[in-house]
Each structure stands twice: as structure tokens, then as C-alpha cells.
Figure 1 (cartoon, one colour):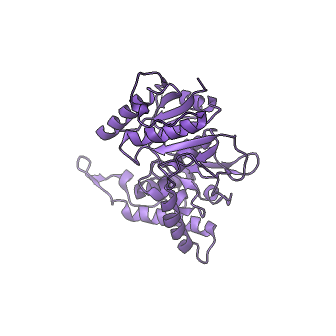
Figure 2 (tube, rainbow, N blue to C red):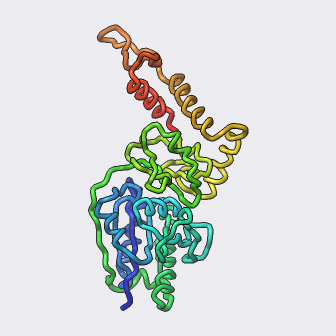
Figure 3 (cartoon, rainbow, N blue to C red):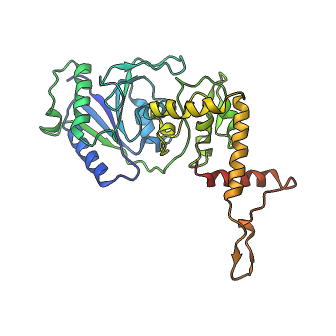
Length: 324
């Protein structure tokens, strides 16, 4: 028997009954193939850098098939952020029909390992047979085996399945697309929370991912190259849909950047967020027991004499309320 092909099956955070059914059927079909080594992990976006799931992913040196609940572009760059790299393979979840034709991904012209990462979006089709057939084509070509569609859901259990019961929590952090990023550093200049930094070569990096404010995608909106994703955002343009990103974010930015520099846009975006937060913040509320207004709900903006940390907290609270 040739070397097994590695398959990563990612769980969803809060699966619907239909998603649970699809997941169970996929797992059943995958474990019946002896040429597959299947690993079940929590939601791909929630994995922590040194956790057992990421360690397992890093230990795989060959081609990798990943089935998750994210756009393929998002999955690919989430893997990249964890040090799991290779060429991006074309799958049924992408625009191209060919399931395993490698897509060119230079990761900012940096060298990549000689292997392919096939990323499937499990939201693209509710039929397990579609994914199993696509995986069958990939494995058949890789191992030089005859293509026998349908066998993936029949026969005796023979595949290897490892379920990693890692405890995770929902995470929120930016994911960088280095094929688009031109290292303009606008995200570094824009972010208030110290999320971004520079590596030893002076290239932008997500230095403190968990410092990001949950629900805030503002840096993705001001990136001139639409290179920043938040995979769990409900806007496809921000979550990693390539077509939506180009048609949505870059169109907006072409209008915003007309006649002004990106740094000015970033500053204006912060000021606008603060102004909107002040408008939306409710006025003083009366505590019925004390008969006085509650200071915590005051509409007053911190004055120039207020401590810098207090002013920053006020701005952070305002950005959170925007629901960006």
C-alpha cells in the first residue's frame, strides 16, 4: 500500500442539524478508505498555535486535504499563519472545476514547500458524495490508482481516523493574504490594539492576534489591497470570498482613496468610528433606587485632562458598539 493521503476534517462551532448530518456522513465515507489518514479537529479558525491540532498539522509533510467551514482562501491562509504551507490546490469549492490543479500562490514571492493544500468549503454543497468524489479524484491521481467513484461510501472500515479532542474557544483575529499584501503597513498604522507588528525582515505580521477586539474588522476595510480577512465575519468580502473581496472592499477603497493618502483614510476612519459611537451612545439613565444618573452610561466624551488609558477605553467601547 502506498503512503496514505492526509485528510483534515474540521468541526463547526455551532453546527445545525443539517451540518451535523453532513459531517457524520463525510466521516463515515472517509473512514472506509484505507488510503486515507483522517484527523478530526475543532474549527480551523479557533485552533491555537501550539495546540495538539496545529502540532498534528505541522507534522504532515506531504499533500494535505482540508475540509472546513470557511472559504478555501481563508482556510489556506489560516493554515499559513500556523506554519502549514504549500501550493493552493483548486477544488470544487472554488470557481475552477478541476479539483486538483495547483493554483499559483507565491506567498509574497517567498518559497513554498513542494506540496499541495486542497481546501474544501463544506458550506458549498450539502451532499457528502460531492466531496468524497472530489477527494477520490485527488487521491487517485496522487497514488496512481484507478478512479472508482462511489467506492468511498461502501465497503469495510479500513481508514485511519484520529479525533483530537482539543478544547477551544471562539477566536477573532485578522488573517493575512500574502499574495495580495504589498507591505504598505497601513494596518499597522491603523490598529489601536497592537495586533500587528514587523518580523525580522521588516514584513508585516499578526504579532498579537488575540489582542484584536472581537467583531471589529476595521483594518480589513482600510487595507488598500483587500489582503486582510476575518474568516468568521458575515460579510463575504471580509470573510475571504475572493470575488466579493475584489468587488466590494477594493471598490470602496478606490472611492475612499481618491485624492487622499491611505494614512489619512485610516485616521478619518478612527475619527468617524468615535463620532458614530458618541451619537449611538445612550444618554444618562436614571437609577430608580438612587434617583440619579448612572455615570457609566454618560454621553460625555473624556476631556483632555482624562488619563490616556481612559480615553482609549472610551474609544474601544465606541468601536465595539459600531458592530463593524
